[in-house]
Image (cartoon, rainbow, N blue to C red; front, side):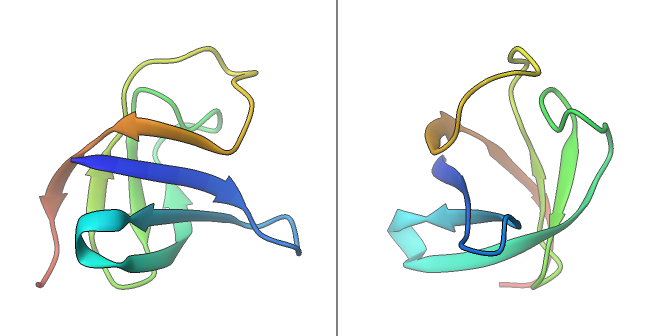
Length: 71
């Protein structure tokens, strides 16, 4: 699914899912650079992000896969 990743005014990462009109903070990352690993959102969803360069600029829209979490 298409998602947008950005930093909020406090510098924290968040992920927005347009189809669900859902924005949640990213609370943990499998990899320090985030890309190519799993991230966990504040609502418990786990998302697999694509491989990208560690210095990729935000905000960015990417194709991610939802791996788990309650609806």
